[in-house]
Image 1 (cartoon, rainbow over the protein chains, first blue to last red):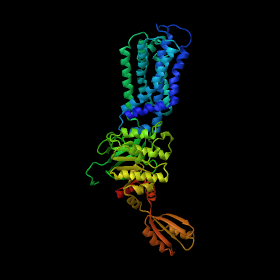
Image 2: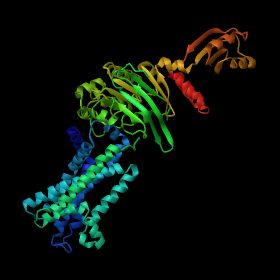
Image 3: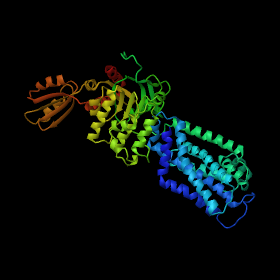
Length: 245
Length: 323
């Protein structure tokens, strides 16, 4: 199983095109959204806009890389029949999911670090050392949840359906979870749903750190539940997959 | 069926069927393969070969009531125990990795994995080891798939159309590698549409047709079962229409081919055909009566089964005769 994890990470690193765009676009988006020279707090929050979007874009970028990367590649691998071949080995379902999460994490870490670096060097965000470390770690660890969701989606959908379904999950989760705009700007019913989404808990970790608090255990617990749910579903779907003939 | 084997069969299908929607892909398959046998699985497209292999490997579950057992266990258990190595036609390879890395992965995942270099050598792909998987030719890919199937000390090796895309030389060295595997006491099951391969390599041939087991025996038995032989001779002159009709009406004649004065017949009763031939008052030169190749036997059996679908009772009689 260790060999598979290593091999999946090697493959991710070799896929230079995917790596480049996944890593480069979150900081670019960050500069475009928050780069205007209007210092000030987010509406309704006591957080600076540049800081708010740094955390949000780190999360958003990591989520993009792992969710898109995993679901599409897995759907492709299923079509090519590699997953069938892999199912003829003693590899347990959780081994497969672990390897896929690990390879996704290889892509999301540099993307997160680059956003933070942009925040510090270009946007002039100032945080304490522990806050930098905490934001990086929370963004990275939280991305595992979406990597697992990516694996599950790669199994739920086939062929042409993968991209639209992934996009739907992706934009829905990002928007409703407050990655683009604070949740308080959404209508009440959307806020009620949004608070229970993994994206909300994901950015919640960073939001707590932003204002100098420790991440809330509630957010961490909710994310852990989602991780177990998605990873469990992914492992189950991997074992049950019979569609690709 | 009386078995002299004390151990559990390597493979056992117990009234295993599989229906997709309204299509009965496999219809109550009952067959057992014994340790050490090399078995060829033949059948026209759509006969149920792929379904059979999928059920065998646990990639699909049989319909309720049917069971598949490998060494007395479920297919999944047997795979997890490392008792089965398989090469699928539909099995893709991981891209973005080198051949050696992929083979190393297979060795690592196998509970009784062999050293990587040995597997590369056994599969004859040592010289491909540093190539990227995505850059291989079809035949080379097949050999890499074979390497994945023999990456560990499995007791059963399952190969689906293993030599597709290989040239003659590659095919020969492939079967020589296969024979080494079989000589090690392993059970080998392969599906192929190259019938000469089945003829040369297999101890036992299974013929599937429309989801049913049409024949089960050695290649020689299958040929005998087809019951058809070829009769060839040359006449002293090109036969006219009357003589041609007479030749066609000889007992047992299933097919007549004329090339000038040369006559080729396929007969279900060659003895009677030849006997009656002389009563026509002709003098056949160079008379030859030969058995069919496995390929022709296979075609005869399957097309006969196709014809018998109209009257299924005949089909059953045929099947009983086979066993």
